[in-house]
Length: 320
Length: 245
Image (cartoon, rainbow over all chains, first blue to last red; front, top):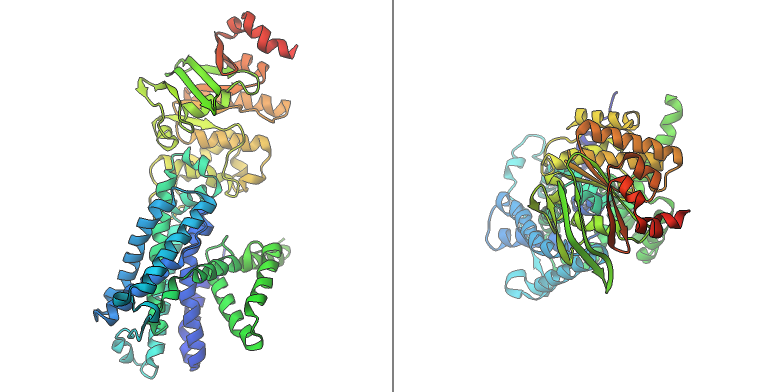
């Protein structure tokens, strides 16, 4: 059977965006790509393990602050500051997750929210370290002089260089996440989602697996946050605020939590829609609400689920 | 093989299981019977660690396993099926049984291997013996009730148990399905030299395959012995068989 290497095509297309020369489109694409990683990390919990987190922004925020502080205040290079975002976010996910996985369903969700609000409050108030309410503007770009010395990339802006770096790093992270959900570990997570009681009785230590998923999801959210702080040229407490958590949850639902690529599609769709609709009306949340209602009732599998369904309808008759 | 001693469990003052003791001999087929509400499922949940007993002990092969959580219990040779069918509904038949193999053989923490073909042979041969091989690719939740029960048996068997606890294996089945399932269970148990303990409300099923029967009534054991002994027991006739005739 011949398969189209979609992932590679998308990666290639993403790498070519700066060639179009539009600063705006590169900016938009950069936004989408970072959010795609953030949403995919959440989907490891929501879509694969069946745990709904209302506080995923906490780890995004922690990652953003980690990279931001290390690069701006400690002047550490990006190669250290970026992984540190994943490590610290993962470590805090381990701490908070230990408590969260003791609870189930709505209680789990509320506890994730509570921890996220604590993180937000600390970022908001701890002036000496986080800059408090004012946030921490002017996070420097990583030193990408090596990119400027390459032949084709010489003429691009610094922001374009950072964009290319983002594409490669996010691609790497998504590849790892994809391996994870296709691994035996990933299969164990789906058995927990389907039926935690039964999973116990095929020998799955449910809590421990849930905690592992929580830590992985937190670490990758942290990496997304680390990139976002630089992209945004500053880190602010609202990165960890609950509205960010709901935004990423909406992306995941919109794109479809049943598939691996759904959340990325959701990130793309939500950011483009926002961009378009805001230019027509100031009632963006109203439009978003209607879109979500239609989606939840009409296409519970999200955009990716709907596309899959459509694809199957179109292809079946021809093959038969 | 399995010894249950003075097991007791109360819910808010209602005593569901009261000082229940019985033995399950190795290699045999034993049944627990009793009318609805007699405490059969509670007893099972106590044995398999889903519920914490108020008092009493469960001993497996000489080892005290009282209160050992399910995920550990199934590592030391206890398999179980549930009264209400309990499978992974949105996974395929193949993925269901494969997951049990992965977990039982300690591969669950492997993050980087591709899961697709791991234990394919084991999974397929087990599905073969259950008559489900041709349906391996189907979504488990769409199978008929009887086939789902068989799949659940597969989940339990993948753990290579020494003793298999089946909670009403034929619940909700038609007469034909019941007969087929019982034949299947009997054959599988024989092939694998399993010790079998099951609960059942259907007397015909019980007396057709069990070598030992324990009768529960209102949380207490009122009879324990061979099918013939139990059938002849005066109290059993009064509280149980009497209801049906």
